[in-house]
Image (cartoon, rainbow over all chains, first blue to last red; front, side):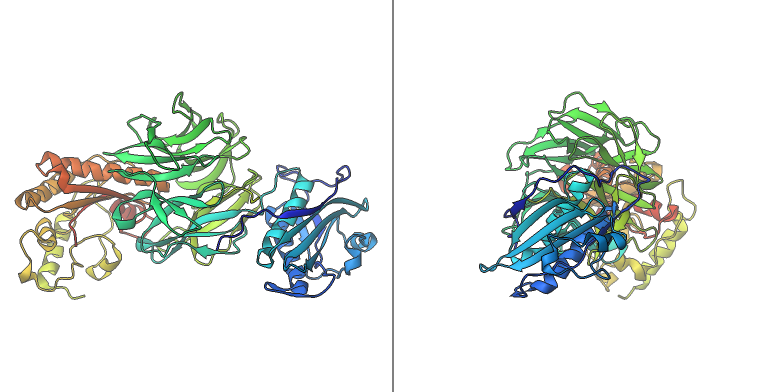
Length: 438
Length: 178
């Protein structure tokens, strides 16, 4: 059941006043902004298939607060432990009370059941000191999609205060793992960016690896060992069917969609030599893009589709290279000791994320010209970062050392300060973040 | 799972043989036969056959028995895929058996240790499987009888995070169909 792609309808807009409150996503020393997030009241208690509007008002506020907290930029308080807001107060905040409680910003809203069975969720952001409204938005959703309204609300607040594009209302494809280290069972799974609405797509009979969402969320490209023939497949989320992307006598792996979804980059190993190829997502004849005798693997397009960053050991160690999207003019951009792997071009275009190999694996970023390298994590093995839709947060997987080999999905922002684990029902690896939902 | 006496004898002999071998030998002994159900690869001690007298010529069991413990695999240095003299001797013995049974098909599995990233290790495992395949081909095994598959770091034989375990996992294993 993947009926979550319809747009959310905005029912109100307001042009905000000049920003006084703001946060800087790149500021490593910034003081967290205290935002009060009280329970969202309902004008009239009503039952919906997702529960009562009163219960939903608390749950929406909880998701908004969790999103804001998870971004690392804000210190949300509530909905538990803060004062209850009567419905009439939603658009007329009790500024003095919130100021006395130490809040710099205030998120209020409401949840209302419409006669047609839909939910209306209102979302308002206030500057407590200036006693002014900063933004407001409203969303009409099916009751089962109430979390999307909450994510959209959190996105509106995050964007208004940070000046960045939104990212909470998005989804993750990843590999759910279980079983002993020598025989891990690996299943394709999807979830919301916060781990909610989790769903397994494959049953684990065949090992699957390295999924990537298509930009429209309708398909996932990934590597499957079905029938012991490791090849890249496309899984159609609507039909539950999978099809091979390109027939080949050789192993194909490491698939990546182009930003427009029309192309798939992948690696193919022929007699011990691995190169990067491109094929239409509809199938057809592949084009070979690299031509070195070494291992070329893991291509990732720039957001405009004109360039590809990939890793190659042509120099003797794994390093990052940028080439034109037709394979011409490859240029090395990383030069550090150890190695660099799994490059992913930011959707903003300004950075490339990678796995730095120097004994341990660490997640880092650098500019597309190779300058400004920064490492964001420090653990035994942090591998394969994937960008949030706004290019400000990364998810990756962390493997534990030793005989357990447990893996888990983690998130870190560009300061490296805000690192947290994404909850998954089993172990998890290879997270791949999709774009912002419409 | 029962273990017939000949298997124990083969294992003991093989352990004795490998005790003093060269630079690429695993520093950690392989797991005892009782653990082999976790190995995910054919080691010959989990072949499901309880009757050694009934091993058919040209069978998977016959291959395992002929090449001996770890005779089905060659080991590699970190991030390398070249064969040394010991590896070539191992593959020569495999080729001799395969040339006696020219209808038997094999899969050569390439593996890597956990210290490489996932995609790179898939490519590295393919290099290792092809190194073994090319040597078998040079010894007369027809190319169309051999399939290569890389598991990268997905199927470690030894589960520790130490040099002994990694040395066992950097391998190419010749596997006959079940």
